[in-house]
Picture 1 (cartoon, rainbow over the protein chains, first blue to last red):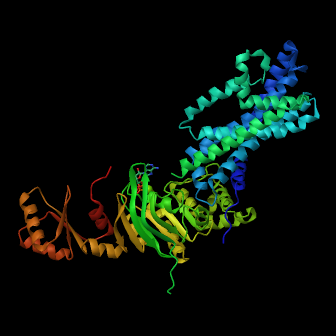
Picture 2 (cartoon, chains in turn cyan, green):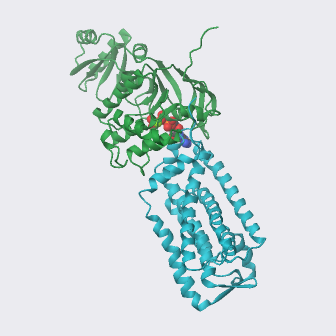
Picture 3 (cartoon, helix red, strand yellow):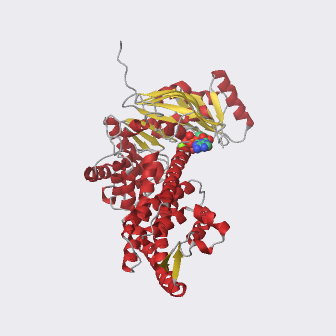
Length: 256
Length: 313
Ligand SMILES: Nc1ncnc2c1ncn2[C@@H]1O[C@H](COP(=O)(O)OP(=O)(O)OP(=O)(O)O)[C@@H](O)[C@H]1O
Ligand SMILES: [Mg+2]
């Protein structure tokens, strides 16, 4: 009996080999949040002063850096799971070619999602180092912010992949930008929840990025509480839900 | 008890629907081990749909299908691990070099990394791509891409190789190279299932073939069986000036002799076992063609007879 493939790992490896020629995209992934940290955190921070988080005061650069670390995880994961995944699915049909081998749909998707999570994870790890250098890390709890960022990347990878299964042309990605950009701006990345009117709070709190930002901010500042368990649970549930939806949807799409 | 030969492929009443549309309408055939089995048919006949069901990437709507004695629906992985697939489109990995394509594809089959390089180089050589290993996919010519796709289908030493129009769009040199390589695989005992639009390819390669049209099998047999069953030994091609008299005379002679005529815009084809004798007889009967041409019947005549001369679409 021949061995039956190696699970999701080879799909991940395939992306790693292809990536060797494109490693420089990592630069933009880290340059962007640094620019935001310098411009918003340090620049605007001088004007804003401290931000009130519940009963505590947090300096503005610390506040923004946490938001940027969560967004880095999102950006890396979204880029891979939407643009790059679409390219492999619809333009080059690399995914179809994989399905002629012992790989199963779930292996392919786990490998793909794993890869985009890795990219989101690398983005946020690089940013964590920058944040340390800028002195915006105030607690040892921050050690847990990397696994949290990976959890955020898992959520956005599976959501991005799911969205991509409905994309028909490249123009459809504009719809996604329409959702991502406001979420990036409004998930308390740059402004605390208290600046929004009361009715908007549940909307902001329902977004996955808000939960990620709030979690990482608590870990960076050490203001950890039981509500962080809520954020983690929310993210885990979203990840599982969209991973399941994606596997179902892809099986229907490909095995027609 | 008698020994049952393990047939790599058995289909019975195999059906594929896309919504209301019936692409494959209850076909039955089986392939013997080591055989080269051809599937001919016009565009839209259902060839690729059939290949996809066999390669387990498209579930059947109805009927029975066994590949290596296994059911594609439940044992897809086992089947795919023993199968090589050359899809109609070369879906090569454009982000990788030719060699990387072959190495990564082995990884999909669970081959350890350190073994992949040697096998990739061996397959590149086998497909005469030895000097293109480091090239990306895009700059390769159509023939090279096709060869690379075939090399990729061989990474797992498949027991059966599925080839969906392996030579469409290739120049004669590339086609002959491919045929020669397919012969070698056949000699090594690999079962080949191939679709093609080229009758000469089917005659060259296939031990047995089916002709499909509109989702059903309209004929089955070896190329020579099909020719002797569905057409005469020879075909006479006749050209006339616009004179009604000659055409009428031809019709008269043919109907007396029980010969079939195909009237084309520029010529008449008459199916006869002895072409020269027919021409002599025509002249004696006062029919005077401007030009005559006698040739052996080919699979193409069978194909056109069975599937018609007009475009389906
Ligand atoms: N995914 C699909 N959805 C709907 N219809 C399909 C699908 N795939 C194939 N068909 C239809 O099924 C019929 C058979 O298609 P198939 O690709 O099997 O033909 P074919 O014999 O391979 O033709 P060709 O020689 O052009 O490759 C065609 O009419 C085609 O339009
Ligand atoms: Mg086809």
